[in-house]
Length: 125
Image (cartoon, rainbow, N blue to C red; front, side, top):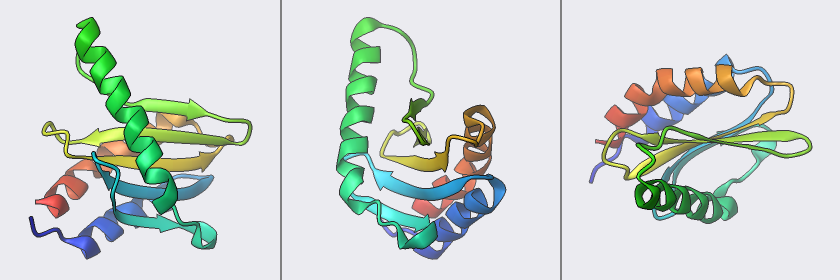
């Protein structure tokens, strides 16, 4: 599969510029391999992508087994961060990761993630 990495980076940069408290964003394959990322202060998310993938795969499996409907997104809140996960497209081959400060509103952030999903999906094809 030929991916448009510059297109992915541009979409992630758009995401970053649109969200106050932005720390990092990435597109990750469902098996945990980083595809593209942007971050402030040269933060590297590569080491965390496998963990995010495990969280997402477990959530997808739980929803499926429970018959609880389609997955939408995951919001993880720590003492000083929000970590948001959102699957890109319906084929569930990749997902977005967004990390912000606690000051950012996760609902607003998810809306911005949804708005750039089309550009990310097009760059993945």
